Length: 453
Ligand SMILES: [Zn+2]
Image 1: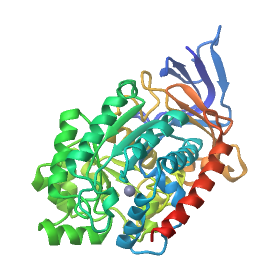
Image 2 (image 1 turned 180 degrees about the vertical axis):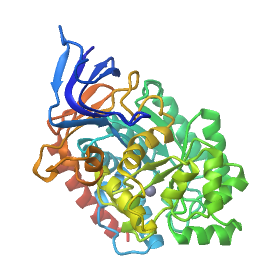
Image 3 (image 1 turned 180 degrees about the horizontal axis):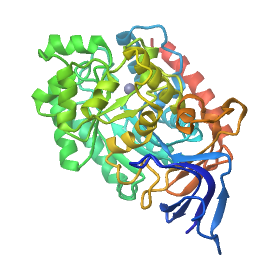
Image 4 (image 1 turned 120 degrees about the vertical axis):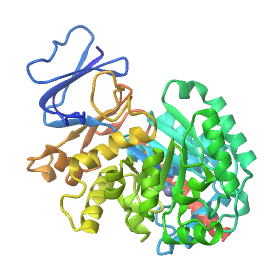
């Protein structure tokens, strides 16, 4: 044993939803070595470090299943636009975004995420003017010490997106192959996954690209991340261009509706498409704050869960959220479904916590490694302090985590058993230097965007 966390309220999220009021968790070699109720805690001896977690809640680290870290530098730049014009603005960033911007934006976004309890981040990357832009995100994952998935997606249809960020499927997949080869050691260690995907079919991704990314993912045993039916305009486009009733229906006719497929958004689905996602074992990444910000609509989360589709949660990028706050995402996810269904029982807190942890793990094929506090799983854990003023008074700890707690209540974060946040402060990087660099790069980036307008 390396570390023993004692006197915590342990929210295990195991199958029985066990909560240990004065529990302890032992960690050895980056994994959970034991989970103990009060009275059964092993003695601490020798070099074992004890972390007294009185007043704090221990829960699995949060999984942010969908974000775009470069957008940290363009928070609020493209507001007050309809979905398609907003997209045009975001894609326009790709004309002038430099690898140093990509690194700076990712470092700011990841610092915010990890200090707020996120231990795994999926960066859906789509601006690929040069290969260094994606490399910079992986560099940031490593520096911050977070578990990362770089979904290096492809756009092969221009129009909304400028020519600088359009690639052939072959060129995009070659770049994915290079990333897989270059980062093999981190991939094998479980710290990193490299995925691919068609970015936003059919707006910027052809049928050929959808098929080729699917075939590539199968051949390499990796996942697909793709934006699915985020706004009604996307569904109108797939109906007009492809004669399919929706994006999921189109994928099914192409033979590409197969796991591991992470369908971000999935706001506008027919009942038949919900059944199809369930039948084929695909997952959804739900981004309620972003969907609300852009006025896209509210995804049928209750119906997806009832059908058996895992629904992970994501912030989406800072151009439509505008933060990496997963506590806010959990709260808004619950509120949207309750309002939409006119049902205060829709999406209970336990379900929301499982979405933010287990469903995210499932979407990444890591359900046996992450998402609950059980012996043998990786020690990606967070301690949340409910002893602060706005947390008075705690009666139902799971409800509290979803509706009351804030990112600033996160005091400790462990990834693979390594303490990356201690007393609320990220230990791996100089957060003040990252803040200054991010602010300076953002100002210069926006000035260049104006010059290129
Ligand atoms: Zn997105």
